[in-house]
Structures are given as structure tokens and as C-alpha cells.
Amino acid sequence: MHPLPGFSFIRVPSRFMLLGVLAIAVLAATGFERLTDGLKPRRRHAAAVLAGVIIVAECLTTPLPAHRAYAVTIPAADRWLRSSPRPFVVAKLPADRFNERQHSTYMLHSMAYWQKTVHGHSGIRTAAHVNLYAALQHFPSEAALQALTSIGVTRVVLHADMYGRRNGISWLKPVYEDATARVYELEAPR
Image (cartoon, rainbow, N blue to C red):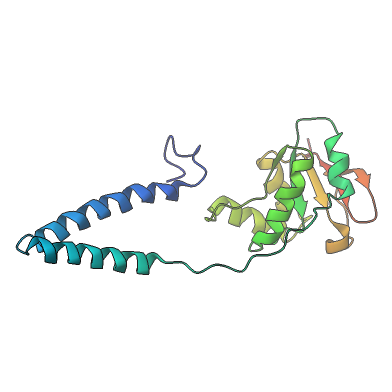
């Protein structure tokens, strides 16, 4: 639905399924009324209570294990980005395409500077994200850099503590470095 006009602004289009569930509930109630139409009022009431118990039992959820809250330490590179000239669009590496926890951490850290980022998830993986993260597996290849510039990325944060050293390329201009991360300005060749 995302490519359809008007739907690109909706973060989670699958929420429209709630309208479908509501329609099914109305149909189920109509069906229940038809099935119990010939019953005496007392039996009909008992059938309604039984149906309600069955519905509640089916929808019953068990508590999920909770994780203890923890302090979030914003990396120095993200604190540096807070004071850098705006606007900018950030990509952080490494970017494992199937690691939602990593993307959540990157999103959490992006609150230090409140600028656009390529990281995030909402329950669906668009083809654009799958293709981008596939290209980023080979960073700093020319294909990865072209993928980043094509979507407007202007800064790349390379977490050296998770990534290791890679040979640079002329598109990357180092603008910040500390013991755990490096920030590059991304400039497409002219």
C-alpha cells in the first residue's frame, strides 16, 4: 500500500486491518443472532455468555518477560553530531539488515541530534530498505555509496568498535573521530 498515493504518510498501514476486524466482529454478531434466534431467552443468554468466554479465552495473552530499564549512553559521535551544521541525513554502520535491535539502538542514539536517519523499523521491510542494507554490507563500495547518496544521506557514522578499519574512498570526508566511532561527510563525485 505504501506506493499508493496518500499512503506514504502512514507509518504502519497494517493498522487499517482493525477496520476489517471490526467488520468481521459485526458479521459474527449477526451470525450469532441468526443461530440463536430460535432459542429461549435463558438459553440464548447462556450461549452469549459462553461465546464471550470463548472469545476472551482465545484472545487471552500471557505476560511477556520484561527487561529491566537501563541507562542509555549516547556515543561521543552522536553528541558531536548534535552540534554540527544542520540539516543532515545519517547512516550508521555496521547496518545488519535483519538486526532490529541494532536499528532500535541507532534510532535511540539519533535522539541526540534529531535529524533524519536511514535506520528504523515498523513491522514491515520495504524493498528499498532491503536493497539499501544489502548494499551497505559491502561499504565503502561504490554501489553502497551511490545507494546512500541517492536517498540523500550526507553523514556516515562508522562504529569502529563494531566495524574495524576499512579503506576509505574519495566520497568520504572525515569530520570527526574518537576511540569508538568515526563520522564522515558523504560527498558524491562531481
